[in-house]
Length: 104
Image (cartoon, rainbow, N blue to C red; front, side, top):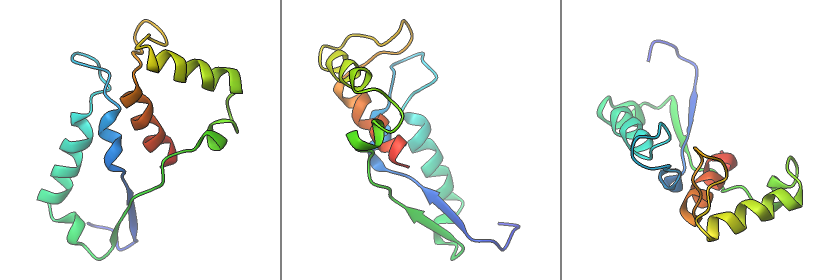
């Protein structure tokens, strides 16, 4: 690293559950590829880099910015594997991954 400032790398293992399927830009392999590249370059051993694993967002966190009706609608659609929109598939794993990312 060129800069001597500390760096916090925020990553939650459940982020890989945020995968919208083959051909969609939101694929879980981008998270694992990024972490592999960081490790290969030795950045995780750099004393200026701290790997931080956040807690997943809670329903209370979601309700700070979304209505209860919307949060419930997303959960119900995820359980039924119904898309939120035409390009936003939902299932329980996508919701778990999303909560991990939002908690970051």
